[in-house]
Length: 102
Image (tube, rainbow, N blue to C red; front, side, top):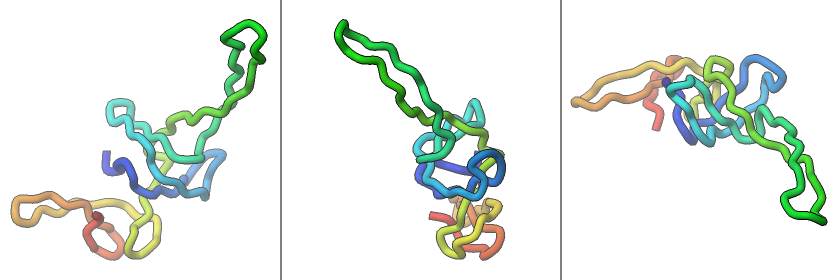
């Protein structure tokens, strides 16, 4: 998976198309990511104690990584990611401006 935690991504398909957000968590085995403020669902929660009221809470649901595209911090555009090996270290690079992503 080329997208990692704390990257800023643009959602390119679905209900939240065109919105941007920060990745809070990634699930590489499932090929999914959790993005801040994106893909919210409402969950009805039962009361836990007697006399307490039930409530509706909003939870974040993971979305597929193919629905998001990284935003380059240098050129501020949605880009594809490449890799470059220099001095025995592997770096992610922006395909548009050809700069290393930190």
